[in-house]
Length: 155
Image 1 (cartoon, rainbow, N blue to C red):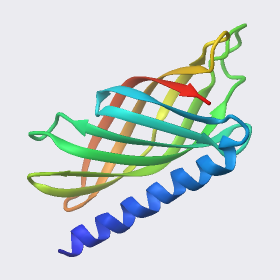
Image 2 (image 1 turned 120 degrees about the horizontal axis):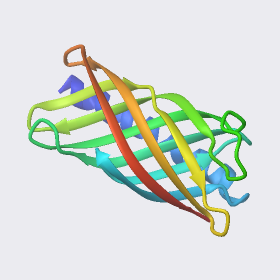
Image 3 (image 1 turned 120 degrees about the vertical axis):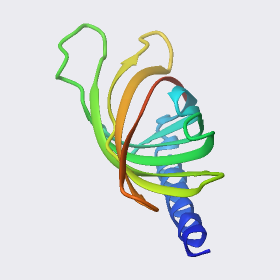
């Protein structure tokens, strides 16, 4: 019961962070929604809070452990000048949290997403590849990871 209550609070806080930052930046055409394919697979959103920082989140289904619902939220730092190219390939790193729920109960963890993005020059589309090591903290301390390919449309 205590874990479920804590899970709801964390989910509400993550959702508020994503929504509030999206509202602040959506006026500048900096909010993207799309899909994430991999582990987990589902919906992805991203809201820019400055020229190089963003908040992203995901609502997805995890195929591990007999399947579970997965929600995560991360604060990201982008490094646009690491890859020198005529195209835009910013690397990014961040920190965030995740909640996974399934038949075995709720799992709470800390994520460290690492990725590379590609901005399509002729369209408001971002393609990305991401790996996120995870340290699960409750109900047991375990190490796991997420990885996936995704695409977001910006408006």
